[in-house]
Amino acid sequence: MTNEKQNIDMAMAIKLFFVNYFNFSGRASRAEFWWVYLALTIIGFVPLVGIFIQLVTFIGLISLTSRRLQDVGFSGWYQLIPYSILSLLIGLSLAEISSTPFAIFISVIVSITFIVFLAKPSIEEDNQWGKKNEYSASDYSSGNNPKDW
Image 1: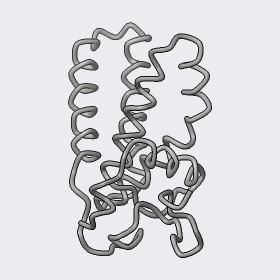
Image 2: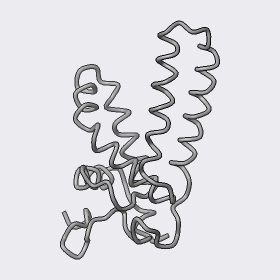
Image 3: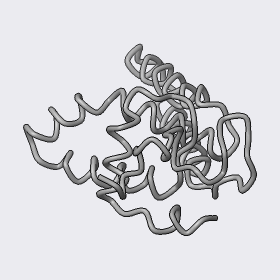
């Protein structure tokens, strides 16, 4: 790992989040992902502002999750699995099928597995989604390094 990846802070992670808002290719480090997730979670506790911010950042969070999965060697499309299973289980529960405890159990297992995927360390070598030294697909030589802002 480079020192830059280890030294990313919340402010830099949020800047990278908005710079790469619509960027679904490339890679995002663990620190970049979890700092943004922490910031959005904290903001989510503010009643009206939290809901507005969550709606505004929805697409960016999907792209960040996609880049994070790609950083650990999985396709960004894998993030559809938890949402698909959760939607199916909610549908079963709403249909009043007596599988609610089973649905809760499956939801917990899928959620834990997904969190493990997101928490895995970055792949140290280049992969099909980008180089190992990058936070994301930004080209730092053209002034996109957040430390230069």
